[in-house]
Image (tube, rainbow, N blue to C red; front, top):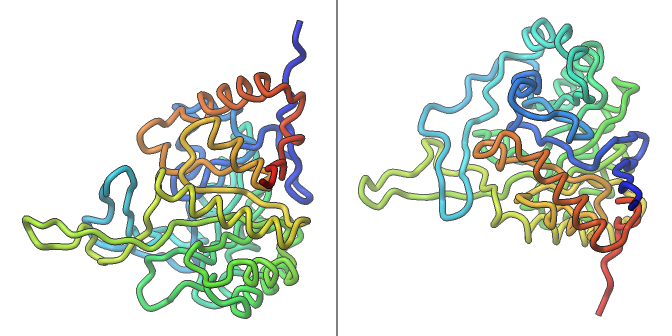
Length: 306
């Protein structure tokens, strides 16, 4: 009888039962998915991003399909951290997997405030969202190594739980940004968020999104994010990485692991297939057995050069 594949992985100080992480913004408040998804397929799930004060987000239309990918310009609509804590603190304990928070803000102090309140509510880790591409007038912090490091340092001083930095594929030098946030105290990196994108309806001549520019995700994002993982792992091999972008199959997960990721985010596929995690994990296990790996950890960084 063949021994089962060991799915456990370590992401810096965090031990995960499986390498799959449900990405922020695609899994609601996590508790929303408990009734429709097999949560045990995931090592952790990240709740939708929250700011210090309520953000209304953008008006509709703010989601649209472009080819095989998806554009979104929601603008991180959320009720603010005070309301979030009131609704989530009791719920987090009922979820059978670790729930992580996702913090956004306009200043380092706001990020730190949100993170500290999330820690108080009982999240297992906080992902510092430095990379949302559709916030008017706020820019993308993750394009600037110094600003990114400043935010992470402020969050690190405010919480004792693990923190990760979610970076942008739009960065001119993502290795520099990754190095800055790791030096500032990040425990892991999430590579990456969506890439900037847009679309126009040729019949109405209106942009697909009211905000014109949004985040492009789905299968076309995978080669871009995978390149970021490969590059950062090559230059900063000790940096724990969540590879994220365009994952649809177990083979996609294995690719990210081989590139150097210790865990893999699953995002926009949830909109079409809420139970995608359990299917993808079965495919990962099947492929690992085919490749004769006893543990998924053996795959991490295993890409072979020509």
